[in-house]
Image 1 (tube, rainbow, N blue to C red):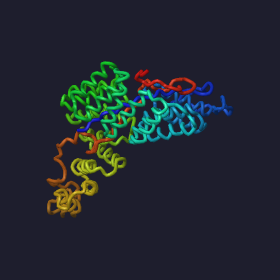
Image 2: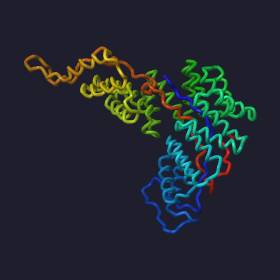
Image 3: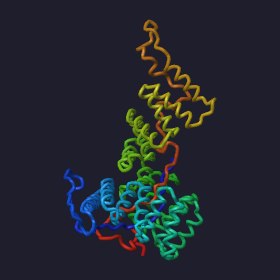
Image 4: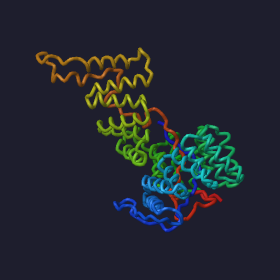
Length: 445
């Protein structure tokens, strides 16, 4: 089972505001937007109204990031130079896991000559979380060239090099931060992740516990501590830490996926289902969560729904061999649809690159012959004469019906590490412009 560690990159506090008094409206209700043709301080009222709706959506509990993103899109669409709306739009994209879209929004600000280290750091973070560590490093280094003592940029560089697997360079940046601020929690967490990557579990445990001592409500530190306990085979302690992380940050998807994988492994399908569905409520097309949800549905006996979710995941993740095999198993054994199972098994054979003499292919041939066989004449005792809709399963075809689905929830492939997310406290405030040097969320001075 592969659980999720979070790279710790610092967050940028995004400010919000508008060039005048916003026209308030119910962002969720049925009332239409207020339409006024005049402008407020050069900004069309339609843009101001949409912006205000976005801010309202971020300030509810829990924040409605989908509505916020849509509102800020309307604001920037109505007024392309609406700097603070672009900032909040990028922020909302990040919270929705739409990192590539966040990159575009931050670059739009840079194209508009917004010179703010916070924007460069945020762009780098979005690049890192979208799987572009080299481009992220370029952004973080650009901040250091302007401000050589920027500890936030160094912590982000440590996270980026760790993502690349360069522990030595990551450690160098961590040491540079800790030499100035020995109690810098993000640096301590990054050091713990370096030890975790090197399988120095006692040292990783020590670092994450130290980080929590300095900052008890750090959700990512609790998640990484749980991951360390898990690798030390202290599963109950791991579950406690993952659940603590979730209680501190309901959007901590790493922790939800981790604890759900453990629940699935220990056959607590209802609890695992709850966590996988919580992730999908935010990210409907999250591949790992989709497969985990389908595995959990299989375990609870909801076979039709499980098969549907498996097939939906195939549309997202492509022909993943394990997903194809599991979906075929349900159609063959639980739903009595061997022809549908055969279609999926054939795709599995191609995706898994099975050798010509693999026993699975021989059993697939038997299954196909049975499914296509004509029904026996009624006087020969052919049962219901359904055309072979429920033939027996060959020995090499699929696991026995009682087999629980694998616990990793990832269909055999480790998902990308999600990385750091903006903290709840980093939601836009009601300022008029982004701060020139927004302080990081960890209180770095």
